[in-house]
Length: 114
Length: 114
Image (cartoon, rainbow over all chains, first blue to last red):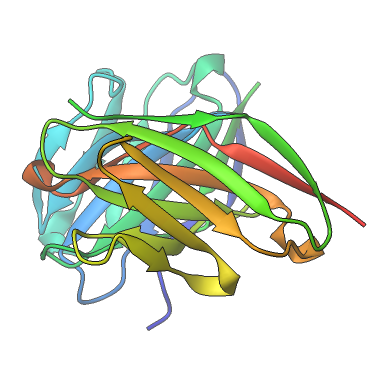
């Protein structure tokens, strides 16, 4: 068990460019979550998957954001036409599909839009 | 709807002194509550969780928290602070009916003085 892995750890991009982040969850976990954390704030829920199905999306997830989890394994989060307000830490977490269980977080991808 | 309020965005304690971090929650259903710790540029690590069993919960690194339903609180304590406890701490509530997604408080940054 190597934990939740996120790549890249850091990304600097110019405004208007597209970026894609990858998350590899713990292998036996069928739930996968994306959160966004801005400086000095707690993480905010973006979306989650149960296996390959995207079951909920936050209103924070504008049309420029899209997430996928093909075959219920790794997940990608894509941001199109990035804006400076997208600068944040993007956190991925995974958990088993059962009650009383916690989410296990990756180390995050820090996005800076210049 | 669920929400979490953490009182005090910054707490400064002396090494060896009591650490007390306050968390109040709002939930329309019986809550599952968590405390996570985050070190700079890292993901979140679980300290402890409350899942409707014992109201006094012990976690890692000497931390514990007490669930008080009448006060809708879940305060985190540690009897004696260490320099290594300097970090940001987040209280969170889980929505079981929504895939266990987490709603976080704004966080409390702990500074430990020698």
